[in-house]
Amino acid sequence: MRTFTVKEIIDATGGILLSGDESNEVYRVCTDSRKAGPGDLFFALKGENNDGHNYLAQVLESGCRTIVVSDESKVPKQAFQAQPGDADIISTEDTTAALQRLSAYYLDSLPLTAKIAVTGSVGKTSTRDMLYYALSTTFRTGRNPKNFNNGFGLPLSIMDFAPDTEAAVLEMGMSAAGEIEKLARLARPDIAIITNIGISHIENLGSREGILKAKLEITSCFDENSVLIINADNDMLTPENVNGPYRVVTVGSGSDCDYRISDVCDSGDKGVEYNLHCGDREYAVKLPVPGAHNAVNSALAVAAAEIAGVSPDKAIRGLEHAELTEKRLNIKNKGRIKVIDDTYNACPDSMKSAINTLMATEKEADGRRIAILGDMLELGGESEKAHLEIGRYAGEKGTDLLIAVGEAAEGYARGAEAMKDMRKDRVRYYADKETLLKDISGMINQGDVVLVKASRSMFLEEVVKEILKDK
Picture 1 (cartoon, one colour):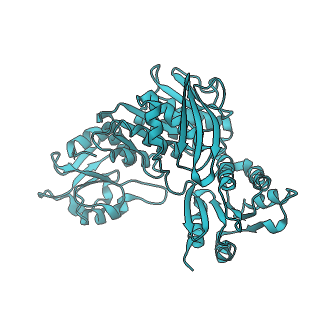
Picture 2 (spheres, rainbow, N blue to C red):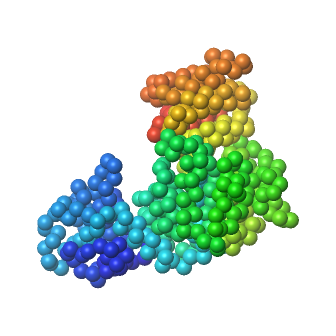
Picture 3 (spheres, one colour):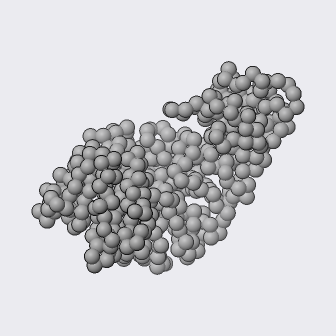
């Protein structure tokens, strides 16, 4: 972020200066009252569980002198005293909308060659990360950190971009219709990627068709010069289903894809190799990240990078250095125990991919391949069927031990036990994580490879920590 004057903030947000000096300057945007300090611009955001207005006294005491509020009655009275060094108080109807407007203003001021938005039911964060590495071979590139992909996180990510940023990679998440459209209108991307249409959030959106429609909001500001890149291996992502006043580029294993993937070799925790065909050109791609599904994610990144001006060979060299955001197929070791930590999120497609990675990972002669799987959430009426399906899949693949944890995860156990080769002693069910934590250390042996995966709110990273804990 560059320096902003209070006047710039007022002009960009449409706010009103209640007290202070328009010539004062700020150097950083902050929304966490515990981290606010001198030189910061604090937005008092209202969330589901917290209201930043309740911490204004603490913010001012920490030395932060510029605040954006929507409820001026909660501003400490002493902040309005007209003395040098007193607070700059900016009033606006909606502090979240004000933050979004300021980030849009800042994004428009950057010397950008490309703005690329990424969304999808699964794979969007991994694709974002790989696209960042592909573009960074040529451009000064900015991206969202961690899972900052919503109405709060995206604008905060943008405000952290360096003033000389040339390419922006903007992940956009959602749980309901209309959310991606707001983000797209904020960022106005030139290029967009849709990685997948699954059943995540089907509870809110009703059907996969509803999910597709919500994801296509990413094209809300597109024109004839814009490009939408799709994973054509996904049954919902066909040129007919995503047609619009923009160019569509297809990526996948089909012979008619613009970027075609072939000869995928999954080496488990050692990574993935495949061939990528772009017209009459062919490239050998070697990824240092696990998961065969990352072949298509990385190919989507190469396609977007080439459209933005980076040659495929350069983009592929960038992918060789890719590191994925933590808790996405992150490999951790303790002695001869290997843990695949994929505890950030879960849906049927990503569950199957993670199980495939587990089964492709080499184990020691005395070791087992163990899957610890927690609930997949927000699947609505599809939940029971989906959990049964994943249990059967784990059994078909030959998992040595399946440990199911959570209320819905009972379906994993039933699905696995229905497989004729999956004896009951190879399936264990725990109704809650706390009970599993008491037993887990005695269930894992040296030489084992262990996959731990669930929806984020199951907090199964605690199981990972327990497995890796020094005894």
